[in-house]
Length: 162
Image 1 (cartoon, rainbow, N blue to C red):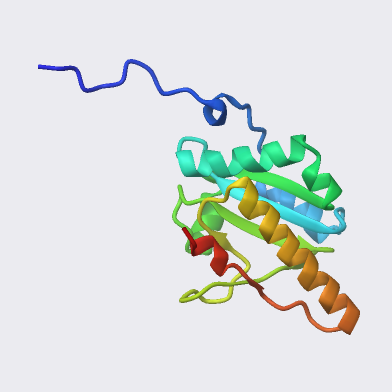
Image 2 (cartoon, helix red, strand yellow):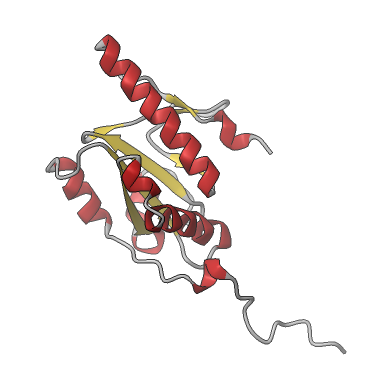
């Protein structure tokens, strides 16, 4: 009989990258104490799930390339394994990557077909999706400031496109 087990885990840059994580308490303190201005991203994912780890990896790469800083985005990555209470409270399945965002410490909401408008977006994100999302958020923030109106929910239906 043939051995069907892998002798070792597959390796690529997603698995090889060291990803530092913050605690949910730290992120919440930074937001509530208004320590971060501009757009703040919080990705909550698990390192053992490839979609979660890839979502973390792409955010880390954008930060290392200086793209997030140039777009005035401060990223935080939270280990979902240690974020279970938050996941349970917000009905997020542990293992499914999720994103939250704030602008000047105010929550940003997202709209998606067949989903309730929420501050949480579930699902893996790649670098291009992060960039598109940041551009949509920046445009919506600029429009809200220009018209002195409330920031509208960001349409994230593009995340469902193949």
